[in-house]
Image (cartoon, rainbow, N blue to C red):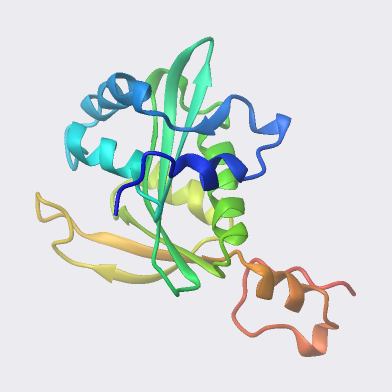
Length: 190
């Protein structure tokens, strides 16, 4: 369901000054978002899809803006009555990569998912995209599966997950003996 005022939740997400120029996407960002999509020839989002993602209440679409120019974006999808969110897309302009923009966008997406009550953020990444895989693993994501023929060009994907929610923080505060099994992002107080 589309709502003209659906940006209310996205706007409520805590965005720190250390997050740079990150803000919720607006409809007037469509031309910039489409330009970013054109720089990546496979699996592009259409104008219609981007417009819908901006307006949907079950989506978080954030942009990284620098000097009035959108140079990155991230899309997170939420399901009703679910504690799982899905990172659908993360793009940074090729000329701006390596500056921590993807890390900042990912951090905001994780906080948004947590604030929405999600415990797990999952994603798929091309198996041959070493740079993206390195970023996700550095941020605490774990490979849980390989999915053959995932993309339009039949390339395989790796499925990754990270526990990001409140329950993870709760378990992180427990003594090491009670540490949540399998949670790679928890750092128990010892």
